[in-house]
Length: 319
Image (cartoon, rainbow, N blue to C red; front, side):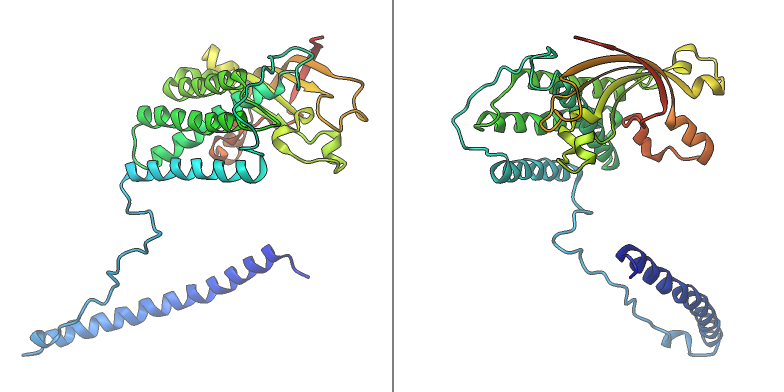
């Protein structure tokens, strides 16, 4: 049986083809009609009788349409919807409200911390990427580059801070000031990247994910907390620093990163204990190569996501 996507695509193609042919016929009919009207208008007494009513719809858009909203109203609605979604998900699935406000001292990158610090870098990257996403939305709504990233950083920080405050009313979590500090670092990095092009041209902060052994085996599957399949890195673009314009240097970058293995539940059967690693490597600038080969940047996705196995690393253990 055909997959639903293939079936839908076949319907779209089948519908598009007759519409294309019909479009040609309609153009010919309108052309003939126009000629006829022009001829009739030349006849005595006919010009005053050719009165036609414009029947194009002038109906107002439906109440749920936001296309005609002023941009300030869109910003308020977007952030209000975000707050509502966080509250709904938190109370439904994250045990928000199950405890009075409490705090949790999770530490930073020490070996005896819950995830060896991978969760802290996860907070940095999430806020960094969210701020960039909000920035793009606000630019599309007509805000200047400076205002868009300033508001984007604020919206990202609001989103993640609400989640952290919600954790403070959770039995299983608790408010972590370390997480909040990393949230702030993430939005600060995003602001600097978008505010100053020289930074964006020289360095990216990226997240890599390739499913961990436990995720591949089906024991668990949570992309955001699959730390044994994640890496966090800074990619230093060689030509951004050297300014030679050479294609080879534009395609290469030096990467410095950090990751942990064996900290997540279910990792025991796949890793020999808990480990923290740093690494440095020579990698490929996938955004540049994609643009060079296809003419497209894929919306800059690879400025944020590191494609696995596109670099040669040398690692060391941090224990």
